[in-house]
Amino acid sequence: VSAHACEPTAVDDDGLGPIQWPDGARCAVMLSFDFDAETLWTARDPANAQRLGTLSQGVYGAQVGIPKILETLRDAAVPATFFVPGWTAEHHRDKVVRILAAGHEVGHHGHLHLRIDPEQPEREREEFARGLQALQATVGVQPLGYRSPGWEVSALTMTVLQEHGLLYDSSMMDHVHPYRHTLPDGRRGPIELPVHWSLDDAPLALFSVRAPKTIVTNAHLLQLWQDEFREIYRWGGLFNLTMHPQVIGRPSRIALLREFIGWLRGFPGVWFARGADIATAWAQQEARS
Ligand SMILES: [Zn+2]
Image 1 (cartoon, helix red, strand yellow):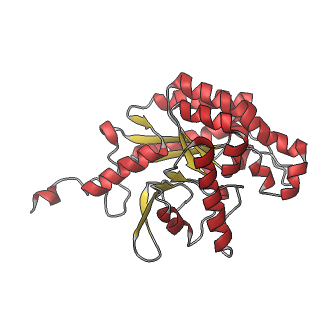
Image 2: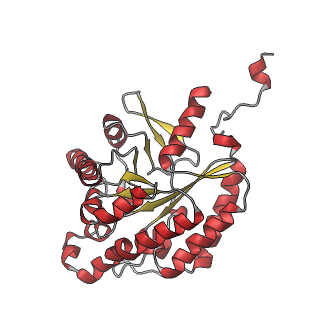
Image 3: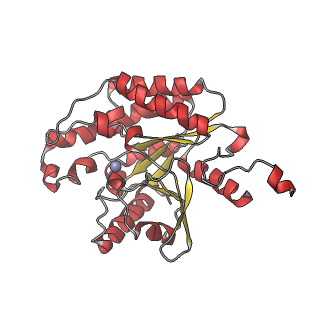
């Protein structure tokens, strides 16, 4: 029997074993904010650009949501990741500058927040390039991470990320643990930091007149997030929470964020980290195994 066979491996054959996070941490927590602002509404309907009432929901995200989120993260002393469309960086540059100055990560989130259409590869490439260019031109950011608008991905997406040197993607729902993409041509692609609708504030708390639904209470969201966290913690994985400044930035939701971070802190070995740090740590484990 080789020594190797006697030692517990970091990741079992299913890729579901606990991940060896830095400093012996049990679970990684990625707090992510999709700073769509007005693009959330203009991407749904370009005519919304003239509907100031509809747009004002996105304006709130920039005007109130971002400052209150930054204050909450500062008080809790935790880092976070903000995925920012190029348009948002151009129109709310001061807020993105403040995000960066506070030590948070800024990732790529398209340009006009257009959902990827697999039938329009040229549009996908253009939207990606424009978003990248806008982040570089306005705030000097060369993003390491990408999150696709509305979490749609085509067969081309990971190749585009690879071509532009991105380290990771965070748009897929096929796992809980991070994993490495394989490109269509067989080459190694970016790392995935998986997401899910249940760990997103928008499906449950973002209201739209065109598709009205009940706005849930904090208790509802808290129970979903806590239940999911407890089991991910048990698995030794990644808890990747997606929030939107125009949703989580409401007064009661800011209280929810503050209380939830405090609750997470009650668990030993929780590592709050930015997406790029999580992807880097996962890649180090990958290299060791
Ligand atoms: Zn978005």
